[in-house]
Amino acid sequence: MGLLDYFRSRTPNTSSASVAKERLQILVAHERSERNKPDYLPRLQRDLLEVVRRYVHVDDNAITVTMEEDGTHEVLELNIVLPEEAAAAPKPKPRQRSHPRR
Amino acid sequence: MSRIIVVTSGKGGVGKTTTSAAFAMGLAMKGYKTAVIDFDVGLRNLDLIMGCERRVVYDFVNVINGEATLNQALIRDKRRDNLSILPASQTRDKESLTQEGVERVLNELSETFEYIVCDSPAGIERGATLAMYFADDAIVVTNPEVSSVRDSDRMLGILASKSRRAEQGLEPIKEYLLLTRYSPERVRLGEMLSVADVQDILSLHLLGVIPESKSVLSASNSGTPVTLDEKSDAGQAYRDVVRRYLGERVPHRFVEEEKKGLFSRLFGG
Image (cartoon, rainbow over all chains, first blue to last red; front, top):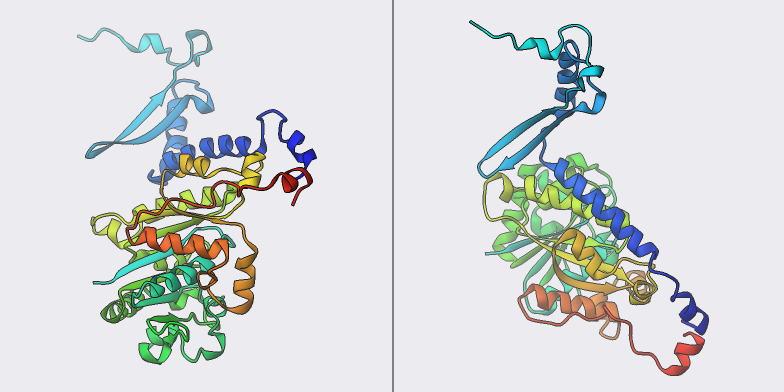
């Protein structure tokens, strides 16, 4: 390498290698988390969204289904973010669902 | 008791066959009875890299189908008589490999050989999954480049879930990282992922670093595993790899740039 390269190499550390590393770290972490999941999860998520929407209007990304390993057993975690009251769907208002039972 | 080593990567063109040939030759040079098998049915190339392409009569698929005996298909290396090559078929497709057939051949090889090196094809199809299925150890060949690193990680997932050891709940396959086509100068310039970067991402035991080297092409040009080229940096790096694999403590070389004189530093060289 010549004298010119020496000066070129002084340029800041947003080198292409560090960009590569960052992109890979994100991607690999994501792909690893997907790795051992059953392949029905996306379909399950879609179906659940459909059912929930019959009652409450929720966003497409309001439902997350994750599968995690916890020692010897697997945990299927379902997380639904219900909308704020104002945005809630008209039909059965979420608040009114909880009638006191006798 | 023999040991089965798969040389794998997912991505093509990273140096699997070069590594299989060099590593198998290195084991033979250390005195071990070694066999190296080409699993790339349809795209056979190990014979060419080993320099025995004109001696191929029968192949792996012939043996699986009972059209030839193992001894008829094995090609004994002319430089090391404790090294044998089992070539892939050039005319069949990868579906001709069956799990039972591969297992039978590996079992028979285990009776004679101490080390069996399986040269995996690229991809994650039949040939690649069968090459790693029975493995005890895996050498994951990786280039310091995004697609290769990603594919290696994918391969690690497959090794951990779809191998015999995984399915039978045995001790998992031992996985080693072999970083090839490495250029310390480009790493210094920030143009290439460093050894440490790749290790951070893959968290694998580093078996060695093979520098980008002209001698790899000239070795394949002449059909000589690069390990036999004592003068070449890549050849020395592969010898180190073999020693490390066999349990010797050998410091890593070719990770840093060679020291250059003032003249070549200033004017390039």
